[in-house]
Image (tube, rainbow, N blue to C red):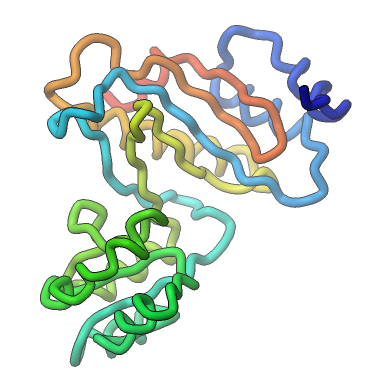
Length: 235
């Protein structure tokens, strides 16, 4: 059995309440920080949905008001003027079929997001085996299959994140870095919570947000009040 380090045990022991208001949860994580790197802060929501059914899938994107603390690397697959628009918007890699070939033949995925125009999906579709497992496949539902590549690039660079319920009905979303000002972390978290709550499928019955936890890379998981979270999405 793995032995828990003293710092980890101490930080976990600081969580003494069944649930915390979001403001207290952020403050607690920042107080018990011991890692020597700037930890990522994540939200995890357990939802009352059954993702085996298509009509209960929860998926979408949201732009964090204060970003993630890092700039994402964005690749764009397009043709003609769309390539120029992507470059001017700040895309890191831009190309057409030659970029598709590079990804396919070299298993190249040195990017955080891939945007494609609808007409290029006929060739991008071949990349499912490479991009699918890494969650990088362009999808209209997340705004990464679009003719407006400039806006898509700018949104991702500004801090657009994707949320999606997994097979166990959990949604994991980063909301910033532990070094952020507390209010910025709070506003980012509220933005994500609101988006997930508003994405509740009509087919979902009963309690929607069963639990919600705020955590950092090395820190403890701090439970939040599910009822308060649902109220955020109804504002």
